[in-house]
Image (cartoon, rainbow, N blue to C red):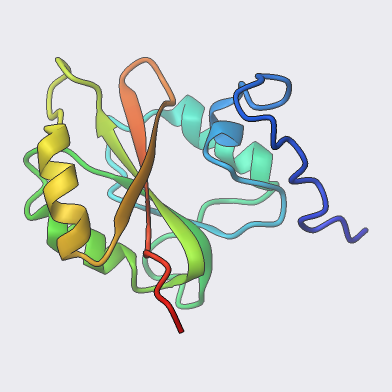
Length: 150
């Protein structure tokens, strides 16, 4: 049935009523199309399954060829140029969608310096909004295209 975005009600903020699952913390909802980029054998399969359960669909990859509501971009310090990775992640993203940059937590192999993210985001045309712990080894940084006046 059609309850698309009718349940965005929890505006009180940080109550953990339904938002304590990692996928809920990412703002993902049933029916969304979520693209996954940068998957490797070190990604968190539990988080991936939680996202798929939440959206009630499989994650799509870079060959999807249609617009997506959100992108999960797994990124490690040695994956190359972060600006290029973010620009590539924008390819299929619908206007108003978010890129969740998933990076290893500080102290874990491949962790990305927060300053690198803060520097790369605006160069790629993105604004950093939130960071959330989403698993034992990974954190997520939400990046969106800034709203521009018409």
